[in-house]
Length: 444
Image (cartoon, rainbow, N blue to C red; front, side, top):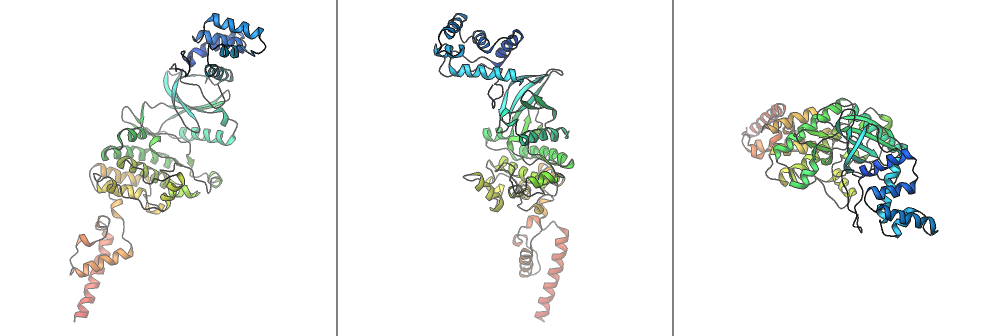
């Protein structure tokens, strides 16, 4: 194969444009290559065999082109003669050569069988496979060969494997193996038979509140496990949250995960933004060195916002404008976008997405307290206790004085987060007594 393309899906035969014939499956080609390798077959003869074995041309047509390539200097190879005679297309020959190169370079991973392509990103391609020794399905992430000579890419690839291997939680995709075969680096992990949250958003636009909260709880539990072991994910988003057919949520892709204690890596990445623009935290955008659990809580909040409203929290014409809004723009409360939402879930998301780290949940344990309360239909106790600033406090005191000593909730700014705070009520009582005493003194 070419240096930047892993094996194609071996379970399918894909029709090629401009030809009535179809492309051979990788499985068929591999069998022919393996047999030819035992016999020491050269490339021209191997291509001829593959063309016949896979039904792209007949043996007679190949023989005709072989004789032509030997007698006509303009025909540099059998492959060229086959193309010039229009028995196969250039694309079909190119695909055969790619697969031959991949087989000869050792891309086949010992102990595993590739079953099909699951997806591809900028950094790697993921295949469904089978671990032969245990007869179980797995997912195999393969680093393209063009990145294999770059130490930075290779180290990040193995770092993902190490990070995943250090975690053992039912809501985190489990790591099985990491290594190198030929020119290719691979990472074997648990295969999740299901879908992603992103798939659901595309299909249904948004989740119901109860479904979204249940998913968020499972992701928060996964993050709590990672944080307790010193890892921050740094790329929580809908595409990295998988849901199995049994309804189990799995947090995936630790490609950007970093140990919070790794000061050297933090300094090396200082000033650089790592993450996905729609869900990235403000401190990641700034390239702060002390990225911690609060960053993952923010990204999960942005993901939850998207899940329950059908919209990303901030949008823009390009990534820079989106990230600028994460830093500066005021968040439209989720229940203003979707009036069907409860005040509780809106409070939780707003606290998760507070721009200042100190205004967010201190940990996933605190976040889980509120999410579970919302799941039970209760007021989230932590998000509901936001303390008023001094100017708002003065407004409350003034409103109380004007009411003649009777507190009227409709005049209290942000009453949902104040009235349940015992300390605030105690201070408020003292202030009210002081104000009334002064008023009586003036009246006398």
